[in-house]
Image (cartoon, rainbow, N blue to C red):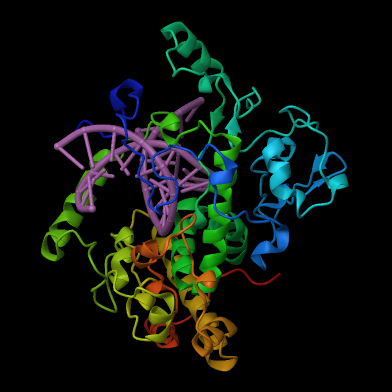
Length: 401
DNA sequence: CGCCCTTTGAAGTGG
DNA sequence: CCACTTCAAAGGGCG
């Protein structure tokens, strides 16, 4: 029914302030942060800035006129090649990278001609200072608009935390099991994601935030809306169903996302999204979430979800096994070496810094509302064990050969 | 050949 | 504000 974003009133002008909403309460009012000066404190975006994360933003390190494309096993692509040449970016990084590392401005196209992951088009992205920012508003003639649209490269959405995580971990997961179907792999990744510690997730949230920042600097005028209707997704029917289902639950809890109150053992893995409301928004502080081992929601995600998806039986089996195996590892780590993350967190309450801050600069108020409930962070060994008990390891995973 | 599936998160629109 | 939708990646499956 009408599909909210589909037509979108043929690119309406955001009806005034529509869509100006920023979840994180960062740049309210403007679609994209126009001036770097308004951005929250810069992040070096250095490869090491995020700890162990190897590459996600490896492109930031240009070398001899060429960005370094740190390509992970799975093939990690360079997000913003052109970026390295951007003046604003260089200012962004200058404090961190020696001059010689910053290649001379090449005006867009990367010398190597490496395709831009976020730009799917032969045409290289235009400078942020593109015509669209024409003074006096955008009173472009239809023709102009059309023309622009024609040549306008497809700038992709910046990856969110989970997407970044997937990119990094996919290859590993694929290697660990015989599964290949992305749908199945993604399920595993989804559960793994939930099993990550707060700190672990935080890395990706921060990374994602940087990506967004970067993206907004590179493409100040870009809007996610630009990509609407380019993918022809029409699972609306299905979504409608799921949503109606959700609605039922939410009706009970009044607009709160259905909390994870499913049976420990079985739960038709049908409402992945529900994992959100796990903590309601009570935790308020990450430390609180941490401090309360109770955080039941924390464990649900990795539990023995039957995976009653459309996934094939074999796939499901593997998924289950894989999860169990993974959890067993987690459990083992937790019990034996008392996982550094959780122990350290518990021992010394993580400062807000370690918090997964999913959004950009976050005022104190936003902290309380922080969506990505990290309740689901600290996995409980018990849960893992439970899984193990429920699903004995019949390891389908590949031999480590 | 091209959409579907599947995941989470961000961001868009409409009410 | 809330609800809902789309799109990011990815790659086998499938019509």
